[in-house]
Image (cartoon, rainbow over all chains, first blue to last red; front, side):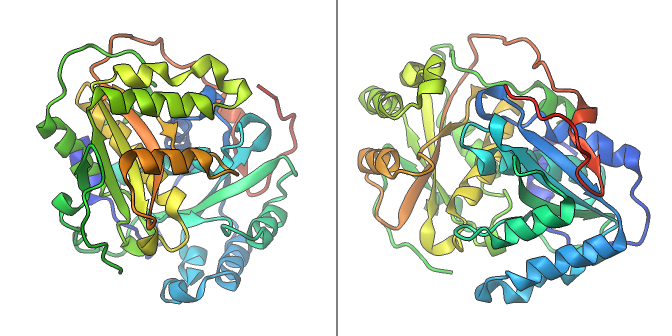
Length: 188
Length: 188
């Protein structure tokens, strides 16, 4: 697929075939993820690759324990069913006060590299915006040192679902020229 | 180029040819950027396309005024020389408390779509992590309503520089299996 096709067709995948996802494939994807833009090219991202079934179950429980009310429909139980979970982490000493941004950029590249290889995944935050409890729990689970923060959890596997194409907001509503053009902001 | 080649070869470009960048090209890129993952597929991102020379100069001054000491080598004067600057913004009412993450993901897609078309750009934050002054200044400049926050500024143009390939940290230092493997964390 071309880049345009990959960008348009990537969907969040929460159901996976039991088919194994080899280390070679994961290494290829992480090799590409590290090329994401980073603050002053400091490359602060690192990755923990989790395959252990109990560890994946504990991560799912942690995500569920801190799930905001409005996202309850997206319970993280499926996390335990993914062949592989990648935790994208950031070395704070390298991140120039932009830990989260750097981790999010690497995750965007990771998801595209996975999609290009026929793998499905979904972006899950490894922290709450205003409370350190979820990140602390994940750090404990992964044995992260205090200098390293988890940013995202990305379950990966060959898809066992084919979501329909996304319904997109009209492009014309999203583009403004020079200054914000007044218009109604619609709530979801 | 394949996706892998695009991910590896994208560099931050801060020097631009005066050659015009048409609206059709910008619209194509923003059309793709909006397909980035978003919280509960709420698609909260919107874009302000800035071509006015005075406005670009004022944005550069704002970025410089709030530039952290350690990033002074990356003064934003070049922002005023880009044919186009895109401000990636987020409608807070749609973002499920993840404004920044949603904006960063769309920016990652935007930069790749631009690179695929031969355009260069660079990721610039439109806010400081712990102080609202830069974001407030940019919001005033762009006339953003209170419900909309700026997340990034991306200057775009045909490159007038060809940076060498990135020197990458060794991949083996970045990948851990199951749990963090103790090792020395190097500072940049």
